[in-house]
Length: 60
Image (tube, rainbow, N blue to C red; front, side, top):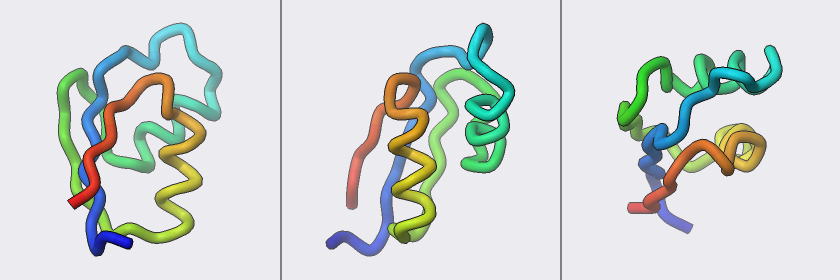
């Protein structure tokens, strides 16, 4: 398993539920095309799985 994971917001969270929008903020994705890099932990993987229809994931 990779040490870090990089993800980019490619689709807007507008129209999504409050939980989805809160998850995006928790991941550090508050604007379109913003990219964040985090440690690859089960907590982050779960959050990414929840918003997988809005993001693009690249493992490093």
